Image 1: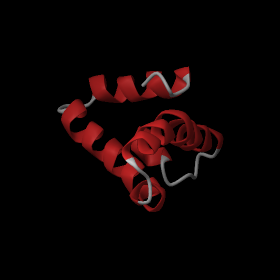
Image 2: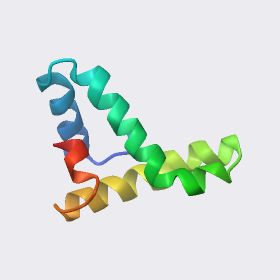
Image 3: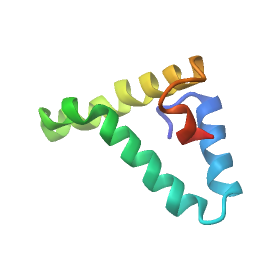
Length: 79
């Protein structure tokens, strides 16, 4: 979570807490969305590169894109 911007963190936690079984269902969907979006990059990386990529690049690019464009394919994930 710390790699995301504050509005994204608040939105994610709001969804976790407001939905019935929100953490179980939404967290699974959130992780699956990230893995699907970055699967081509992740498959070619070693573990250390993978962790760094997810911490620095993936989280910020997904949430900045989703925050900037309401029609983004990730927007429903955080709604």
